[in-house]
Amino acid sequence: MPDRARSVARALRCVAPLAGLALAALALPDPALPAANPVTFNYSNSTNLQAYARPTGAVVVGRNFFNPALVDQIQAGGGEVYQYVDVIDGFWTSSSATGDQAALYGGAHTDPAYLMKPTRSNWPGTPLTDMRPGSPWVLHAVDHISRWFPTTHAKGLFLDVVGERLWTDAWGQMSADEKAAWAAGNRDFVHRLRVALGPRAILIANNVWTQGNPDLNGITIEHHPVSSAPSWAGMLNRTDWATPARHIVIATSTADAHAWAKIPGVTHVTAQSSYGGPADPLLPFSMLPGVASLPATAPGGAAAPAKRRQLAALLRGNLLTNPSFERRVLVPWSGWRGSLRRRAAHGAPHGRNIAQITFTGTAATYAVTRSAPKRVTTSAGARYSARAWVSAGSRNSIGKPVTVYLRERSPSGALVQEVRGRTVKLGLDFIPVGASLRSRHAGDRMEISVVQDRARSGNSFQLDAVSLAPVR
Image 1 (cartoon, rainbow, N blue to C red):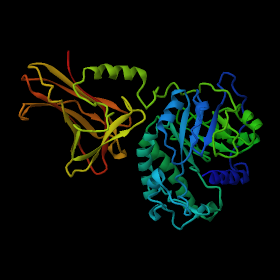
Image 2 (cartoon, one colour; image 1 turned 90 degrees about the vertical axis):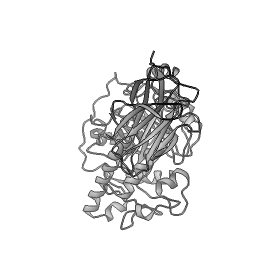
Image 3 (cartoon, helix red, strand yellow; image 1 turned 180 degrees about the vertical axis):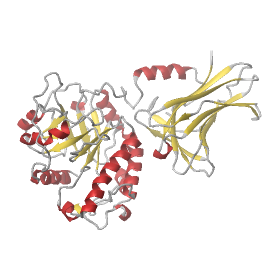
């Protein structure tokens, strides 16, 4: 990865200063704006990153980096962690992918079904992937990243090489139609990724986007002298980037780094010539715009403090054990017509974990169900309320209806009554859904089901902070 990153930098430096870009005059920096902040690239995946646990330092970590506790520590201090991803190049043919990389590339070596035809390479031994819009590779990459990224607890992704064009001989080998399809596929990939990850994920591309991209938070300017800043002004000063805007500069020297930090639009600067391990911060830290608008997450990806307090109050009277899936054993939770699993999720409404169910049935309905413990029985005429926080677990589940069913059962298990709550539509963010009933008998047991209708293959939804409590 470091070798490839250095090669990309060399290739970009060889390009005439972004021919075709208008040379906009640079405005003087507004003294009221905060200065750019330090960023470091850490492709050796060192854990010596505490210096960047400050508002709003940033760290880009390399492949197969997985240390949610360290990520939480950095981000609890006000920093931001971005995970490196390369979807443009297949994995090296001279070595074998493992772990998350093997899952991304479809095996120890890139699945041939995911590669560009005819085969071309940016660099020897790394064949280009098929970046046409909606290709099997694009769909697979988005699906993998959407499942893997939340487990990292990181704020964002550093998308290497993703942009409007390539800067190696591979680009010159492509026909005009292939170039157009490649550029359109990059835009399609970024859009699908944004839909899958939601508005809070920070997405930064390491390439040019002369027309901007509202699904990206920004770009990276890698090893270009500050004298080329006018060529980048049109991109840096666009107002249609996703917020908060994040534009990284990897400067050619310490002096250039300090000069780049004064260019309007630049938010993070380093002067690293290689990315093997973390570099010392070059600049002082300051709070950048947009940070306050992000969820104020606590270590472990918990929700904002106000929501945590609200949920804690709700869960105090909860009759259900393990309501936020913090225990490893899912029993007595069960899936109906679906495969139920527990996983870590950054931004979970409560705690570190959530439950996710994936549809496996043939009918149009599937659910997560559980009963209150046997020792918990109803009082005659008492009112009970159930609530769960739900979100889409797959792209094709967005907009699907979810409803809570609350049931009263006799000691023998016979259904006494069933109440259906208000239906909500699944989205990218967790939202509450619930139901309530008044019990008919003493000594009965309560049962809660969270049900998605209009199900089809690939549907999945997530839930957390499930409560069942008497209404006082």
